Image (cartoon, rainbow, N blue to C red):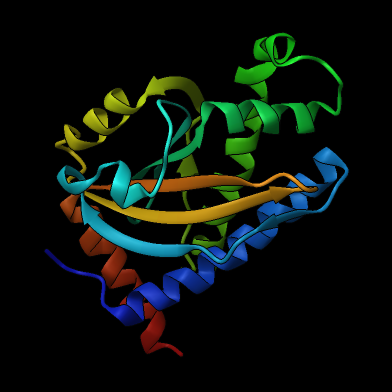
Length: 203
């Protein structure tokens, strides 16, 4: 495959850091408190290699926001939180004292909004850096078991490679670990490498 070198990964880490900063600023306005997103750790893996240990996540059920992006390279973006962390984030976004059970009815809408903010901030940063543009679908949110989540990723034959971003999200004094996954086809991975090479050549 057309692999991403350390130079490519460093460039992507920097640009996704810009995207994380944009997302944090937008989320801060929504929850009314400071939001911090860590510098993303970036790696590329074959989708068949992905498991809980590589993703460094623990838990039995996850909330996953999925969004499709099309452009010079296509990607399916998946933002993953443990189910408990997802509901805590919804509580912060709603700014209410409602119980977890009461918040569940708002989970779909709030998590789609969260995913839309973070995913679009990251992709807009990539688009700005590479001087390209993307179209995006509406976000979709679902709860999935660990087994279902990784089985779906491993069986995504149209996207044999994944670009994984490990991101820590802190709202006020809460700490939630989220993972942003981009599923890429072989052609999309090659196009991504080509776009970064063009960018690096212009520096």
